[in-house]
Image (cartoon, rainbow, N blue to C red; front, side, top):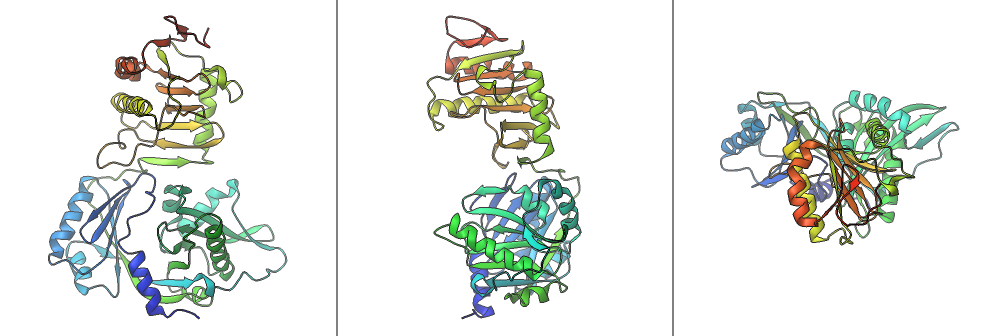
Length: 435
């Protein structure tokens, strides 16, 4: 039996509004402030709220503006039609500008019809890597909905066992007609449709099937039960005829402080990004190493030192934690404005990070590391002037680059003992794979 819109609204209010994410998006800082949840992305920020209006809304709003202004982040604040009128009035008085209203829609996945047999030549599928740029442009041109595809992708394709995203495309005769993007909202009974480029019931049905299938395969014991979306008037009929109910109206209020926000988040997950492969190719060429030869190490440059980590056998070894902290401090001390630090493993996803905007209080989590107990790993600046190579086969850590080495040499030697090699040449009486 289909649930009433009032019940769906109640579930939506209790589970999604004022939610602190189960898995933090890449490059984001999430903070609770009374009835508010504030998210800083660097490029912009969002405010979500729950509960009754504050007795002093003007002061609460002014505090948010001050905090976002300190980071040069524009604010997006969703206001629902059933919220207290004082909220919208106070935001407008503070300089916020409301955007067009959208309809909030929720469906019980069990009420969404199964994907019908499509006509010959038509299929729903995942996009190919070569189609992503064109899809991104099409998604950016779609009307304002729940979450842009660019933001969902920046969160990371797989942020944890409770959160995941997917893109679905409807193809006919080899041509993409429309696309939909969806994410699992960790810690809730919802999967959320970020947006859809056209009114395609086939894609909405496929989204429900994806949420149910992924739930049974990955998200047990909390399989998604509901789908939520926001849509302009032109897309609402497609949702309603697919089993969704209109439960509310919402508008995004926006305000921008003085100053330029960052153009990218402080950290980013790298999957099939061209820069991932480009950095690897330059690293392999400069340090004369490939996946097949990595066990034998790299050609260590003159400004390098290598230490033995033979006693480190577990990823949670306290000694490794100390080593990583020393490396992090050294990278931050040697970093220049505009630097990007890449943490990469062969044939596995990596990350990109601005080392001056991560790892400290009020900043996103540090997204890089120097050593793994079961994989070779590198972390390097884009210009390759400094970085590390963790060779798990040799159980060694090579640190290179004059700027980095100057900040970590003494501390790492105190932690790990005799240096194994300097400039690629063995020293002391420690056995080495080196020349």
